[in-house]
Length: 161
Image (cartoon, rainbow, N blue to C red; front, side):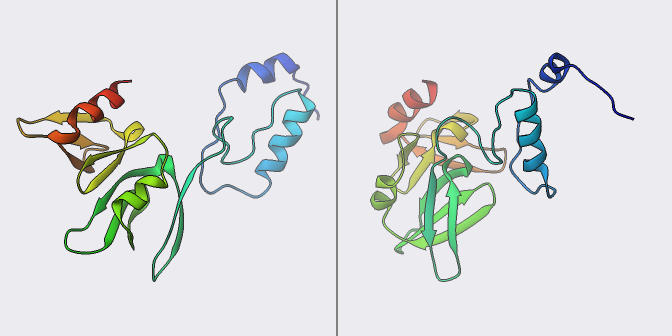
């Protein structure tokens, strides 16, 4: 038995459909492409989030090669007394050898140095806690980094805009 549904009803119910990055079942992209073609809709590939290409931070260490989307990054931290940088992101933590200024040059304007040892991704900051001599930038309840008074005004200005 074939059920006929008008184009308007399908368009109405699919108007707020979003793709979610992650594991998917085989054939999902093919089915979505077929529906889009058949009902004069726009086909958005998997992992497509906007009209702009997604930006990545590439890193290599002894154990892995990583390609981390900018919007998955919380912050970078220079590990004191070493030439290592720690990157804290949605999927975990990794370290690699670099200089903080070299890392900053590879990032876009959504990143800001917030401390002599930290670079934060501004769009992922959910809350800023104020203390007399520093700020704490909260990305989640469990993930945060410091912001020194030297960078306070610039960070607040960028976060509010």
